[in-house]
Length: 459
Image (cartoon, rainbow, N blue to C red; front, top):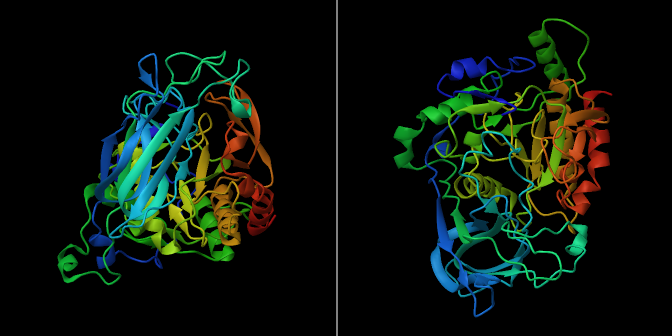
């Protein structure tokens, strides 16, 4: 594995790994209170899909699904299958019923190409034996009924699949060349995720005895940000540029004025209600942060900013419990209102090894803008938040947001393993892998984000 693990049990040692600096400004952070203690943990329903009708090829189904049915409440869904190397070449559509009503949504498409959001080949996370193939998750809001249909591509021509992707036959679930019908991957299941219910802002009387208690895992996750905020903080406060620069200089001992943007306000994992018992206990680190890859979560835009913590808890649960990853894949998330959230545990100022850009997770970080930005324009607040976050985090590691850098590919569909690749310091996911992510409209805003990020750094 091109990273290293730090036990969260020895969290004092982990806190000492503040990779570029040990930043002292922690006094103004929002401390944990009753509102963080009473969140329900959430749940996942996993329902096997069945063949639809008599549409079969050689005994294998080309269409699977579930008819309309009542289910326990959920808010996010996705489809998974057994082999993470198999690609679902076809379409996945769902419709859902709003909780407590008889109103069903129209059919909605789920993004099927999701394998490029993953740990690098050959790493411990990828080779754990727990990883499964998955679609992107889709946020549908409070629902208690569902219907799903999964259809394989009917056929392909001998030159490959639509959109110019190479076609390959065999047991990986992809269509053989020559016009043969595609088959679906084995073990298709529908995953229905309930993010849990957040308590009232002031907490409930029953929360009071637990208000200041934390599990060992939650304490470890919070302690790696000890230089920035008190243990159990719900947010890491923003700082002025002058204060940020002073903190960096104090940590480094001496030197020229750093090019670093003002630290933005960041909602911690405790702030968005992460159940730290789900993730692996150890933290995984890489050596540095040379680049930031921007993604869209492809979960849809039908959420309010007040629901963003629930969306994050759902993605986290889907990544860990359904996809088989060690933690949420992204290092940070940004909602449509420009709020910034801590992603994978290990410390927001540290070089945490993520699972976001297949082949390029080493020495990089991944930022997911919550939503789908293929045809919808990303809100200005979200693009600004990406610029502010990268100005600070890349500045801690001496990276110029307007510049380029070199990363070594861990393997993917654009660059062979071991290839030294020149990339923008702020890149889109599609720069490292042939994918639609981060969506055409968000990708078109990355130039704006680079320029703004550099200005925030004082360049």
